Amino acid sequence: MSDPDTLKVYATQAADYAAFSSDHLSRDPLLTAFIAALPAGGHALDLGCGPGAAAAVMAGAGLHVHATDAVAEMIALVPAHPHIRAEVHTFDQISGTDLYDGIWANYSLLHAPREQLPTILRALHTALKSGGQLHIAMKLGDTTDRDSIGRQYTYVTEAELRSLLTAAGFTPTKKHEGRDKGLDGTYADWIALAAYG
Image (cartoon, rainbow, N blue to C red):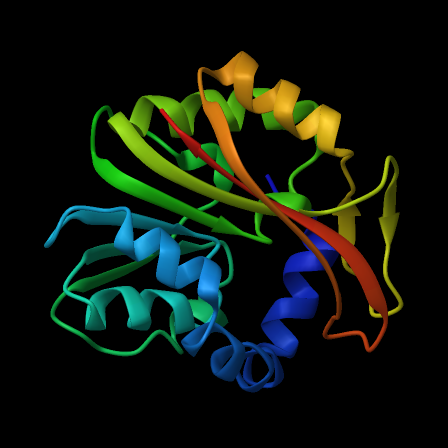
């Protein structure tokens, strides 16, 4: 379960977060590459979808998207689209086997407690079809801390993230790193890994 104070921040700032994230995701090369790696008309999970900017891009590309977020105020902002099924779900509610061709976990699991990451990643591996694609992005570091607006983060090192993925059954492939300004106005280093199940 995500930290209640973090969920409250996203609930009260849902509209601001939507404005912050939608333009970037519409032209994100990592999202473009993720979509290109999936079969036409495939099924994708947008885990921690926020206001649904990535889900909208995926659906626009012909994918069937299950968009989930723990914050009802975020789910209310997900665009209506016949290929998007938006639901309020927490990380510990991931279930099912061989459901998705791809899972997009873009800066969502950084809000999961460190001790729960192995269980969550195993559930994602089970829900992913054999050979399916995972995109995961996290902030780099080795602590658990709050930002200036109260969100709790689990920071990971590259080695830790690779180890977690491998232990869950994934095979990491491509890596991207960068540094960007977040909703709280501060810059942070991040890592994104592509992996297959």
